[in-house]
Image 1: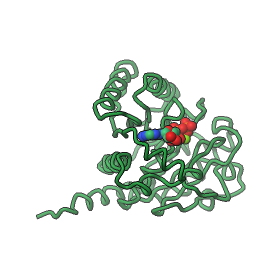
Image 2: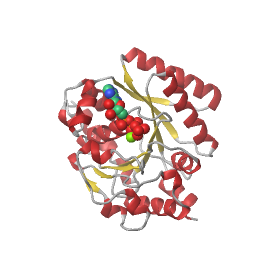
Image 3: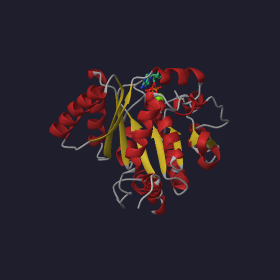
Image 4: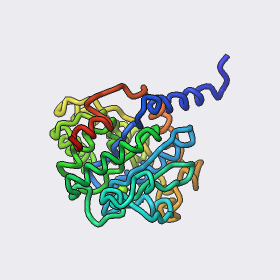
Length: 286
Ligand SMILES: Nc1ncnc2c1ncn2[C@@H]1O[C@H](COP(=O)(O)OP(=O)(O)OP(=O)(O)O)[C@@H](O)[C@H]1O
Ligand SMILES: [Mg+2]
């Protein structure tokens, strides 16, 4: 008879299957509207996934306005800009955070969008170098959107589209998705509704966006989960200590743990020539 820990063991087993295939699941985190909670979500979700045995790297793609180091209260010596400028290898620029997660902050003075072709090529090659070491690599695409960003997002294995229930955030999430599709990419898109006052309001917002995306973009977008409005998030930012660690019983932590479980319950990555690190290498290095 299965014991109580069996579902957890299954989750952990599922979580390591992607790496068995040789490459990390590459997850773009993007939003359209700024300030909707991407960086807090990616960091705390990474910590929740790490608690289940996933090995995670976070790449702070918000080059000029990077926040990850601040949210963690850490001060790494190197950032992603140093990697893209060829000053250091990505593997050496990664800093170890809590629960063994690895991260690299932005550390530049301009946007990812403004990087030259050779810098983007270097980014992709360096991602390929570390890909085999992790189950998931999250790329936090911060502010600033354009042709390169759209292409990068479109070629990732997955897009985690973050929005709040506000009509402006929903509209901007829709526009971002439209631009990614126009760039030729069709990432599997999973929606995350943040700062919702209730589960019902989160579901309503999700249904509205799913409807227009299906209707006008012909794309089926799944709801990965929602995160309730919770002052624990702001306290964690002020303390520079992620809420999953500082307030493990908060509403925000419970929501993020549920999101992590939803993510882990997913099917393992299927080999796909159109997405993932191989597709990025083909696009940016040949
Ligand atoms: N669930 C929540 N409950 C309460 N406050 C929240 C929640 N999520 C985010 N916030 C608030 O929103 C702020 C912005 O969050 P965050 O920096 O993660 O957004 P972002 O999308 O990464 O922003 P940017 O587009 O600038 O990169 C946080 O500092 C916090 O004050
Ligand atoms: Mg951010």
